[in-house]
Every structure is written in C-alpha cells, then in structure tokens.
Image 1 (cartoon, one colour):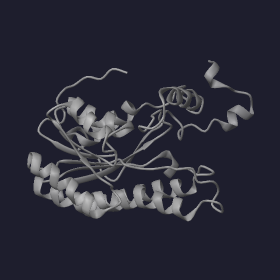
Image 2 (cartoon, rainbow, N blue to C red; image 1 turned 45 degrees about the horizontal axis):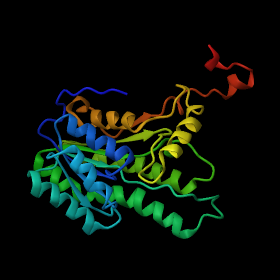
Image 3 (cartoon, rainbow, N blue to C red; image 1 turned 90 degrees about the horizontal axis):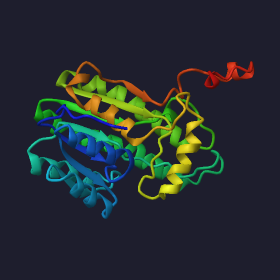
Image 4 (spheres, one colour; image 1 turned 90 degrees about the vertical axis):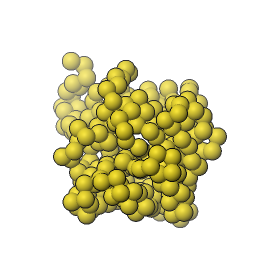
Length: 269
C-alpha cells in the first residue's frame, strides 16, 4: 500500500506508546513522513532504538512500561526535553494474551490486560494532558478495538478492556474540549501484524485467516491504522472529539448472517 506525504504534522511532536512494532511502528514512520518529531515508547529495548534510528533524526526512543506512572511521566519529560513540547499522544500499547472462557481465565491474565489496556491509557492521559495544555491544545488518540464494540467469545477481559477505553475516551473528551484537547480512539478489525514476535510466515497465515472475516476480502494492515491515526492527529480532524473511528474492513458494518442463511454470498458478485 502506497502513502503520500504532505506535511500534515509539520511542527508537531508526537508520543507513541507501543511504538517499536506493529501498529505503533507503522504510525511512528507515517507521522515522521508527515513532518512530526516522534518519541517511540515501548518495553522492547532492543527493537525500539532500531526503529528510531531507521526513521532518523526526527525520532527518539525511550524504554517504557505503560503500567507504571513513573515510566509514563519520564516518557513525556523525554519528549519535552528533546523538542520543547507535546502535541499528539497516541496511547497505542496494548496486550491480548490467550484467556479462555471467563471461568478459566487466570486472575494474572485478567490483571495484565487491565493494567496495560486500561491503566496504561489512563496514565497516558493523566500525565500527558498537562503537556498538551502547555502547548495550547492537541490530540489524544487511543487504540481500542472492534472487540470493544461486540463480544468475542474467549476474549472477555480483552473485550471489556477495549470497551473501557471507548468509554474513557468519551468522558475525557467532554472534560478537555474547552481546553483545545481532542480525545478519540480507533477501533481496528483484524490486523495482520507480528507485534514483533511472530515470524513472517505466521503473519502471512494470520493475513489469510483474517481475510475471510472482513467483507472487503482482506485483513487489515498496520498502515491502515497508521493512516487513521494520522487523520486524528492532524488539523483535518479539528472538529472531531469523543469518537470511535472504526477501521475494520466492514466487520461491524453489514450483518451478513441473514443473507448467508438464505444462500446469498455477495462475495461471489
């Protein structure tokens, strides 16, 4: 998939959590292409510096665990020290380990999902908003999921966490709109990304598996979400706050079950 650059983030400083791989890495690269200076924050202390060096002088890396307030504060301080301001916060870091059903899900698994997917986003807002205030406003983005809009069996904790992100975004948007701070989230569908630990063969298998679940006939790619984040980070979305931008290839749009029951397979048109 090709992209074009038009300087939509010229002069802006963006902080991206989970920026060392997958959606975060694609977004860091896309933001830099559009003129932003980017702080990549991630637990992965090996891949993160490599991604930053690949991007060049407009990127920095800081090892960060979004579950810990001191790490999140240090993350914003690093961006401010490097470039004097923060304009965009992308709370992208997340986790989705195997859970099993609600009876069998281990407590430690539930706690991990809660701490990364909910607490991590909350900390990113709590400690990032003062920096946006000093900059005169800005954009906060979070990665939610279609799992926060619909139930997925065997993923109750994950679904709950992403639903919480959506609710948190709505509440925070109302709190900070008058200060020029917009708060939105993206709800991806099935995205073929290795998150830094799957082999290319495994990613390709995931891509094939996801394709049939989306009406558009393909899985999502990290760049699809990066482009959505670019829109929400840019001034082009200045009248949008408190919203969920669903980027899912039609997953949650048309309900095809009735048609399939009647034997109508629209993919064969």
